[in-house]
Amino acid sequence: MRFMVSCFTVVVNAWAIQRDPSICGEEADKYIPERFMIRAADYEEQSFVFIPFSSGRRTCLGRDFAIVENEHALANISYWFDWKLPGDAEVETLDMHETSGVANTKRVANTKKIPLELVPSLHFPEFDP
Image 1 (tube, rainbow, N blue to C red):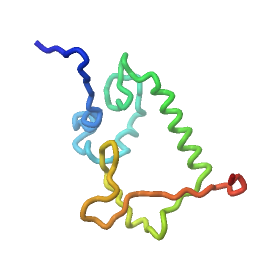
Image 2: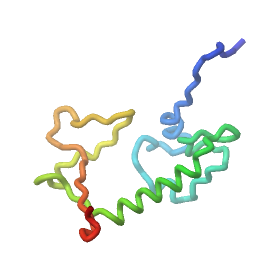
Image 3: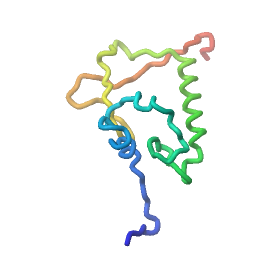
Image 4: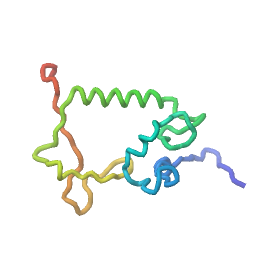
């Protein structure tokens, strides 16, 4: 008999589901955005390929708002700011390894590479407050 105790928290491991080789192929752990170009992500379907907002009847009510707001925020940041690397950093020194977790570490152990940090500068100086 399987049951849940009252006040017990159940967490769906979205990280593991979205890296399932039966869904994303043998290279599920690798960043290959082209795998999603075959078809657009259908947020309404029940295939559980893209579930950061859950799925089905219990999907997050703010899902559509969050998707639109993310696009809006990125468009505004891209429009209003120019971006450069801090100090004398070179592109070759950036650490572009994928990590997971709530917070990423500042350095990868035993490497001289630095994390990606960008310095914004206002694209339209006439609007500088």
